[in-house]
Length: 150
Image (cartoon, rainbow, N blue to C red; front, side, top):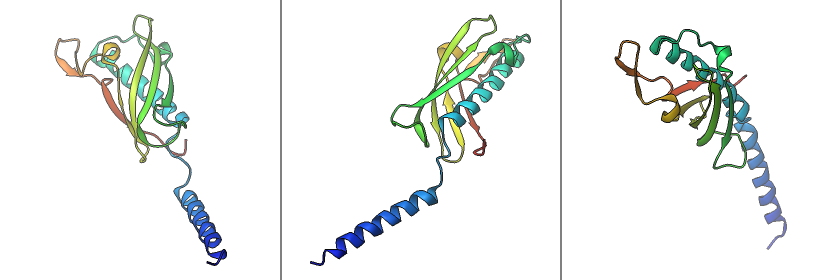
Protein backbone atom coordinates (compact mmCIF):
# COMPACT_ATOMS: atom_id res chain seq x y z
CA UNK A 1 0.00 0.00 0.00
CA UNK A 2 1.23 3.46 -0.83
CA UNK A 3 2.18 5.30 2.44
CA UNK A 4 1.24 8.60 0.83
CA UNK A 5 -2.51 7.78 0.70
CA UNK A 6 -3.11 7.74 4.51
CA UNK A 7 -1.18 11.00 4.86
CA UNK A 8 -3.22 12.69 2.14
CA UNK A 9 -6.43 11.41 3.74
CA UNK A 10 -5.39 12.70 7.15
CA UNK A 11 -4.40 16.09 5.72
CA UNK A 12 -7.70 16.36 3.82
CA UNK A 13 -9.67 15.52 6.96
CA UNK A 14 -7.77 18.19 8.90
CA UNK A 15 -8.45 20.82 6.22
CA UNK A 16 -12.16 19.92 6.10
CA UNK A 17 -12.39 20.06 9.91
CA UNK A 18 -10.67 23.45 10.06
CA UNK A 19 -12.93 24.82 7.31
CA UNK A 20 -16.00 23.64 9.19
CA UNK A 21 -14.83 25.42 12.34
CA UNK A 22 -14.17 28.65 10.46
CA UNK A 23 -17.54 28.46 8.69
CA UNK A 24 -19.32 27.93 12.01
CA UNK A 25 -17.90 31.21 13.27
CA UNK A 26 -17.43 32.13 16.92
CA UNK A 27 -19.75 30.82 19.60
CA UNK A 28 -22.72 33.14 19.76
CA UNK A 29 -23.87 31.89 23.16
CA UNK A 30 -21.27 32.91 25.72
CA UNK A 31 -21.34 33.29 29.49
CA UNK A 32 -20.86 37.10 29.41
CA UNK A 33 -23.62 37.60 26.82
CA UNK A 34 -26.04 35.39 28.71
CA UNK A 35 -25.24 37.04 32.06
CA UNK A 36 -25.68 40.55 30.66
CA UNK A 37 -28.97 39.73 28.97
CA UNK A 38 -30.44 37.73 31.84
CA UNK A 39 -29.49 40.45 34.32
CA UNK A 40 -31.26 43.18 32.32
CA UNK A 41 -34.28 41.01 31.52
CA UNK A 42 -34.66 39.90 35.14
CA UNK A 43 -34.56 43.49 36.43
CA UNK A 44 -37.17 44.63 33.89
CA UNK A 45 -39.51 41.75 34.72
CA UNK A 46 -38.93 42.12 38.46
CA UNK A 47 -39.87 45.80 38.25
CA UNK A 48 -42.98 44.89 36.25
CA UNK A 49 -43.91 42.33 38.90
CA UNK A 50 -43.27 44.71 41.79
CA UNK A 51 -44.83 47.87 40.28
CA UNK A 52 -47.71 46.78 38.09
CA UNK A 53 -48.75 43.54 39.76
CA UNK A 54 -47.87 43.92 43.45
CA UNK A 55 -48.03 47.71 43.78
CA UNK A 56 -44.56 48.24 45.27
CA UNK A 57 -43.75 51.50 43.49
CA UNK A 58 -40.63 52.27 45.55
CA UNK A 59 -38.61 49.42 43.99
CA UNK A 60 -36.13 50.68 41.39
CA UNK A 61 -33.56 49.02 39.17
CA UNK A 62 -30.81 50.49 41.34
CA UNK A 63 -32.41 49.31 44.59
CA UNK A 64 -32.45 45.70 43.38
CA UNK A 65 -28.66 45.65 42.99
CA UNK A 66 -29.13 42.68 40.69
CA UNK A 67 -26.19 40.70 39.38
CA UNK A 68 -26.06 37.43 37.46
CA UNK A 69 -23.52 34.62 37.12
CA UNK A 70 -24.01 31.70 34.74
CA UNK A 71 -22.30 28.41 33.97
CA UNK A 72 -22.99 25.23 32.05
CA UNK A 73 -23.57 22.02 33.95
CA UNK A 74 -22.90 19.50 31.16
CA UNK A 75 -19.94 21.16 29.49
CA UNK A 76 -16.48 22.13 30.63
CA UNK A 77 -16.68 25.37 28.63
CA UNK A 78 -19.19 28.15 29.20
CA UNK A 79 -20.05 28.62 25.51
CA UNK A 80 -22.63 27.26 23.13
CA UNK A 81 -26.33 26.63 22.92
CA UNK A 82 -27.97 24.01 25.10
CA UNK A 83 -30.48 23.36 27.88
CA UNK A 84 -27.77 22.95 30.52
CA UNK A 85 -27.11 26.53 31.61
CA UNK A 86 -27.68 27.55 35.23
CA UNK A 87 -27.72 31.21 36.19
CA UNK A 88 -27.74 32.60 39.73
CA UNK A 89 -29.39 35.98 40.06
CA UNK A 90 -28.66 37.93 43.24
CA UNK A 91 -30.91 40.87 44.12
CA UNK A 92 -32.58 42.75 46.95
CA UNK A 93 -36.34 42.36 47.25
CA UNK A 94 -38.90 45.07 48.05
CA UNK A 95 -37.97 44.85 51.76
CA UNK A 96 -34.21 45.10 51.07
CA UNK A 97 -33.53 41.43 51.87
CA UNK A 98 -30.94 39.63 49.74
CA UNK A 99 -32.32 36.98 47.41
CA UNK A 100 -30.47 34.32 45.42
CA UNK A 101 -32.44 32.70 42.63
CA UNK A 102 -31.18 29.76 40.60
CA UNK A 103 -32.60 29.93 37.07
CA UNK A 104 -32.41 26.97 34.71
CA UNK A 105 -31.71 28.33 31.25
CA UNK A 106 -32.09 26.74 27.82
CA UNK A 107 -29.94 28.82 25.46
CA UNK A 108 -30.67 28.57 21.75
CA UNK A 109 -28.37 29.18 18.79
CA UNK A 110 -30.68 31.97 17.54
CA UNK A 111 -29.56 34.35 20.35
CA UNK A 112 -32.62 33.59 22.49
CA UNK A 113 -33.18 31.63 25.69
CA UNK A 114 -35.86 30.44 28.08
CA UNK A 115 -35.25 30.87 31.83
CA UNK A 116 -37.24 29.11 34.54
CA UNK A 117 -37.10 30.69 37.97
CA UNK A 118 -37.29 29.19 41.45
CA UNK A 119 -40.96 29.42 42.46
CA UNK A 120 -40.03 29.46 46.16
CA UNK A 121 -38.39 32.85 45.62
CA UNK A 122 -40.00 34.45 42.56
CA UNK A 123 -43.50 33.08 43.12
CA UNK A 124 -45.75 30.56 41.44
CA UNK A 125 -46.91 30.61 37.82
CA UNK A 126 -49.75 32.93 38.80
CA UNK A 127 -49.74 35.48 41.60
CA UNK A 128 -52.40 37.74 43.12
CA UNK A 129 -52.28 41.35 41.99
CA UNK A 130 -53.29 44.34 44.13
CA UNK A 131 -56.98 43.61 43.48
CA UNK A 132 -56.68 39.93 44.43
CA UNK A 133 -56.99 38.72 40.85
CA UNK A 134 -54.66 35.87 39.76
CA UNK A 135 -52.33 37.01 36.96
CA UNK A 136 -49.33 35.43 35.21
CA UNK A 137 -46.08 35.86 37.11
CA UNK A 138 -43.53 37.31 34.66
CA UNK A 139 -40.60 35.82 36.61
CA UNK A 140 -41.85 32.22 36.80
CA UNK A 141 -40.62 31.48 33.27
CA UNK A 142 -39.58 33.93 30.60
CA UNK A 143 -37.88 34.04 27.26
CA UNK A 144 -35.61 36.72 25.91
CA UNK A 145 -33.08 37.36 23.18
CA UNK A 146 -29.82 39.27 23.09
CA UNK A 147 -27.76 41.09 20.50
CA UNK A 148 -24.94 38.77 19.39
CA UNK A 149 -22.78 41.82 18.68
CA UNK A 150 -22.83 42.87 22.34
